[in-house]
Length: 86
Image (cartoon, rainbow, N blue to C red; front, side):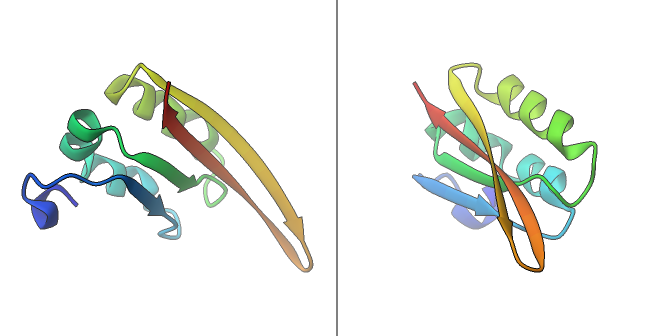
């Protein structure tokens, strides 16, 4: 993301990349740190993501408020992390 945006701002980023969310966040670290876009991140693909993703996001932007929402639907479910600046 950082390479694609090349220093341009982002206001909202959504990640649902089937288990590669941490790698995607790391590839967006400069954009997140500089512009504080709203984030929606899938955190249900790997069990450790529910812990590692919010900790990593908090390290990038300690001023973010972090929320998790669980959405049950038939025949599956999903859990998303939302991060917004205070």
